[in-house]
Structures are given as C-alpha cells and as structure tokens.
Length: 144
Length: 144
Image (cartoon, rainbow over all chains, first blue to last red; front, side, top):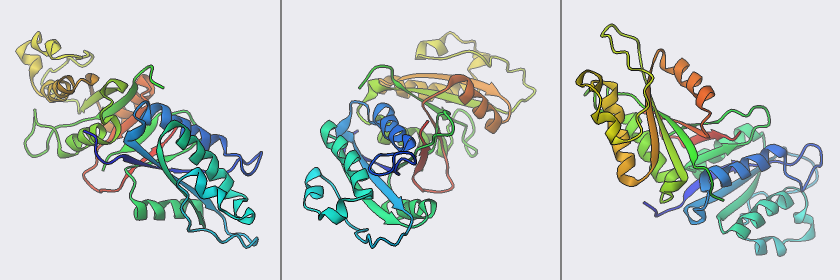
C-alpha cells in the first residue's frame, strides 16, 4: 500500500505579532496537526510542500522561484535573500529534516488565496492543509 | 508520535444505479482514497467512522442508533434489520477488518448534509472525508 508518498501542501505565513522569521500560530498549528494526525509515525509515507505567499512590496526581493529542499540550500544563499520569507520556510524545512519527512518549500508573490489556488492546480498535491485560528472544528476533506 | 488513533469520519451512501447494498462510486472512491493517501501502511494509526444517512421513509426501519464494530455484530441481527443500509455498512466494516483498520459504522435518518454536520459536532472526528464524483481536484483540509 506504499509507493509514492502522499503529497501534502501547506500554506504558511509569518506571525502577525512577532513578524519574520516566526511562523503564525495557525501555520504552526497546521504543521503540528499534519504531523500528529496525518503523518503520525509514517514519516516516509508523506512529503510536505510548504508554500509561503507574500504580498508584492518594494524591497526588491525577487528570488521567488527557487526551491529549498534541505538545510544546505539555505546556507548558500546570500545574506540579502535570507531575509524574511526564506527564514520562515527554513524553520519548517529544518524541522522536517529533523524528523525525517521529505519536503519542499517555495515563495510566491501575490494574493494568498489566488496564489494558493493557482499553486494547487499547478502542483496537484493529494491534500491541501490550511491553518485556521478561528475555530477548532475538525478538518473537512473532499476526496478526489 | 503515536498514541490515540486519528479518527476519520466518512459519509457513505448507496449506489444510485445498483442500489443497496452497493456503495456509490463516490463513497468507494473516498474510502480507497483514505486508505491509499492517509492510512497508507499505518493501519494501527487510524480509526474509520462510517456514517450512512438515510432519508426518512415509511418501511418501519427503526434500528437507527446501533453501532456495528465487527462482522459478528451483523450476524446476530434479524433478517429485517440486515436489509438496506446495514448491508452497505457491512461491506466497509468487513473491508476494514480484512486490512486491520479499526472502525465503527452507524446509520442516521434525516437530511444528509444536516445529519453529517450534526454528527461531526457530536463525534468530533479529526478528519471528515466526503466523497465527490464531480471533480478530481485535491482534497482541501482546514486544520483545527
């Protein structure tokens, strides 16, 4: 029943209180929920895909299409590029490597809702996990 | 990272073409999707909760609050009660026992959408899987 890992895409964003590189409570909640409830002990059965969407700004940050798949990928980056969203993703990627779950992470610019929908159609994950700090209801899933 | 199994609730219904006891294509799809993409090889990490909602009718079928958790539970039922929805659930329960996944199954009467929402609030599963024969998009999940 194994084979290709189940690909779980997750939208993550920065803390509105602490700012970068801290992840929002809902992002951390979604990540921990996915590990505890879906991945559980089956770390080789899943691949996590972290998408961070940034609203366009004027700081010249333009390294939007790189893929970061291991802690080493971050070390070779220039100091400029390490700022902001990349640090955010680094935390999730490092955590995945610690526990032995495959992952990828990338940044896109634009409206989060639109970009997430666009990326879901492009990447076609098996599951999309979206954090919520509003309610504690169980997660609804619609199978394909 | 183990502990209590992740409880996955699943609404299942009968085939509109073949009728009882055959499950609908979307129910079977949701079940197989859950096994392949979520449970995978970790059969002890999950418990499946099958809910079948029947619209109220006039045939006097009133055994609505029993819980069926193993094939034996079905054998002791009177012939009358074996009809219809129970046979539908039996297929899913038997399949779970074959592959070693814990499960429960029950029937409720009413409007499926309303009853499913009510049962989600009552049972509080970690995940609700709803079949769809309309689209093949990936499954959206909102973590608690």
